[in-house]
Length: 347
Image (cartoon, rainbow, N blue to C red; front, side, top):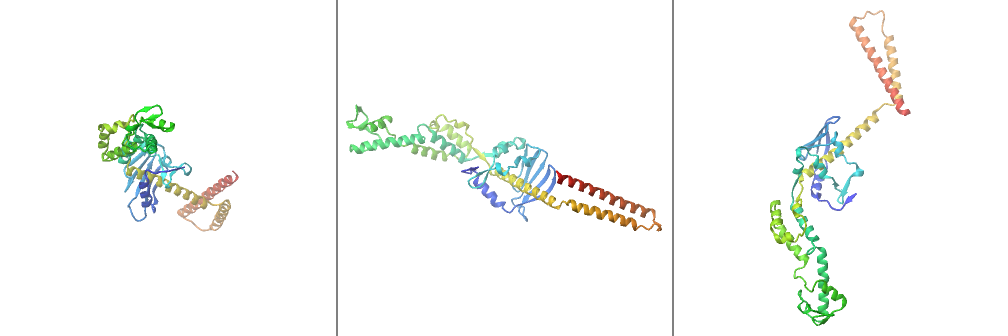
């Protein structure tokens, strides 16, 4: 699934560039207890560590430092998104559920991952203005229609066009100010009451948005503008601007999410390679049978080489006995392995 725009495009692009040569170093791997390091070989710049224990995952290092998450027994499973379930933006960057991941940060610190963003504030203002009944996109479309009608009427009767049409204010039957108006023009003019604002809705929106930009330096200033600038607030109509979330995820948290995702993918690849190596190195049933046969013959030869006439010390006797016992135990273990291998093949 591909989404059209990526609000974190710059952060993601920087991460991909800086980590293009990073590799996984497994420092500890014992069940759910792991210590993984991801770094470019030969440098600790842009490196990070992932530490897991039952129910937890912590990040540390040059980047992604200082976060701890808790949710699943194996937190690598929590952050493991299979390829079929991954969403991507049009630029190829992954689309993660940052909100859901932030909720799993320990210590009630999930609110810390978002900071005031002036672009978010201005986006809210722009959307509210475009949806406004008197200043929105629909209002601008209607404004353009009546201007077109008024200009057409004025051209037809050689009357100079003005944004306010005093010559056409009085209606007398099918005539406006002594001018004959056809049915379409009459409907259009009457809809706007013949009064065309000097400033179009689009121009008024642009003025308010420019004013908002002057007060977008901080969240405090932005909310002061929303509350105290009565002209601006009135133009937002019934929009609950006091409930607007003017924050966005900060760069540090976004990088942490990208770091965890890359660590999980590298570790899963490491696991797959380890399993493949183990499977390739497993002996066949024929190989096991050959080893058992050679071992049994070797024991027979060793027994035949013992000279009954030779006087062995107690220590030598004990060493020989231990050696034969180990050999027989080894043959028994290999024989059991052969049986298990045969059962696997049959199943």
